[in-house]
Amino acid sequence: MILSTRARSLALALLLGFASLAVALPEPIAAASSSASDRVILGETNTIRGSKARSIEVSVPTDATVSWTVHANPDLVVDGAGVFPGVVLAADTPRRYGPLLIAGRAPADALCSGADCPDTEYVVSTMEVSPTQPPAYIIPRGDYILYLLAYGSPVSVTLTLHGLAGTTEIEPFGPAHLASHLMNPRLAIPAQAAYWDGRFRDMETPGLVFVWSAIVSSYVLNDHMEHCFYSEAPPPPTAHLPTCRGADWSNSFGWTKVDTTSLRHEMTTLAYPVSGEGAGVGYWHVATNPVERTTAFALWLTFA
Image (cartoon, rainbow, N blue to C red; front, side, top):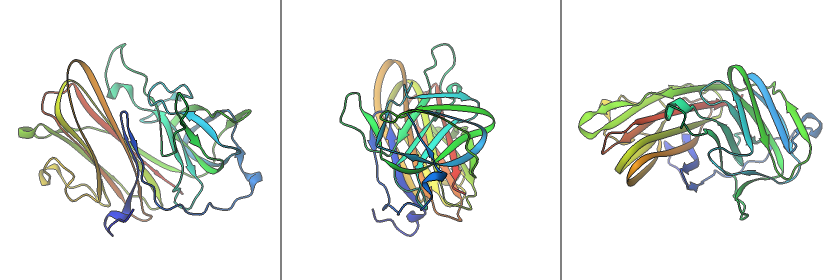
């Protein structure tokens, strides 16, 4: 993938729609060397605990699989508070380019209210999908860094990796820096029913930015969602049309659905900012009819 000088600062790693996946990864970088004895060997059942964002070196001894189910994933159990408590399993390379798995729980109250709220435990990945039924992500044998996503209160994540043996109890202790924002899209251009919010974080070391958004509505006609990425603070919405003008890179999705039942559409996007730069993100939703709810959150994780 050839990127312009401006676009290179935010390289695409993942595009995930509600039922579709498209991946474009940078060229792989040789794995960092490390003594095998320093690593935790992952097993079939892995429980990761802690109260702060931390990391630990781990190894997958042979190819393993994890369910690719987005909602109510049978291989993931998350307990704890925060915007997105969970784990990230990233290839142990200088910029973590390579196989990547993000597993966590999105905030249910951002989607709906009441007893009918869906399970919001998620697994998304850049890994290959097996041809088996049901499909599963294939986690290649190799060395990884495991990051715990925690926000100051206890978090417990149990991740099942099929094809491995044994049980592990892990409390990561290495460095990691995590920031998350539950965004508050507001009506920025009333004449176009365009909702917007933008946030920015400094990132002094390489890392990733993960953005998740969802719309709940009972009637959708030619709606449009877009995630925007910047190496500086996003400009105010008055400087925009309802699109990511001036962004380093963006991901968009449009759809049509006419129904009398509630529709929830979601989109996630992942980008890798370069070292020493900040990362700004924005979220647009252009609605053609009133929506029950439009929401998003952004997660910044830097690799110390």
